[in-house]
Amino acid sequence: MRAARHGTRGVRTGGTDLSEEGQAVDIVVDDLSGPEIVAFLDEHVQQMRSVTPLESKHALDLGELRKPEVTFWSVLDSGSLVGCGAIKRLDVGHAELKSMRTALRRARSGVASLLLEHIVGEARRMGFVRLSLETGSGAFFLPARKLYEKFGFSYCGPFAGYGPDPTSAFMTKEV
Image (cartoon, rainbow, N blue to C red; front, top):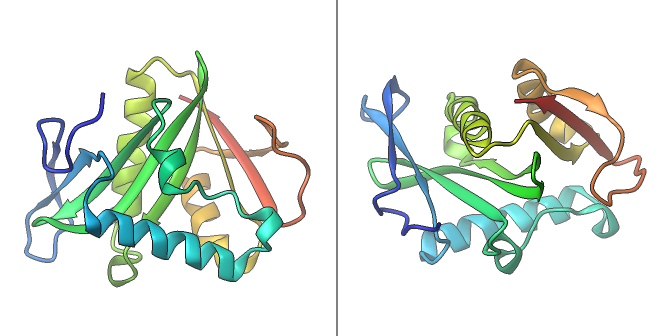
């Protein structure tokens, strides 16, 4: 079920002080209808295109992120978008992490860790037993790979229709 970005599915992070104003941020299921998230995701896709060969870009576009098998979350700090992430159901027990992004002004501030912890918990709650992802293998993606390693993801082979690609790194974990 999708809810508006400021809808009833919002989750207040319990006392996690990550906001610039010293308050907890909100992680909410996003219906991807607001202009701020549309622009944020467009920036994400453009950035991925600038650092990844077109044939190796696997970021989902807005239409693909709106499909029923995708649940998308936005991270809000006092109503301002500071991050996002999604999971895409692959089968009854397996989901793929997609569209992880933190606003540049909030890079390395804990937003990505908070969101990833939330998504892993939600994947477990939804009944998934495995969460996998594809990210870049180059230096640009090293911080992302380190984050995933910190959360227990290990390297694996291609999954869900991906093929071998020297510009991709594949990771997975049991949830």
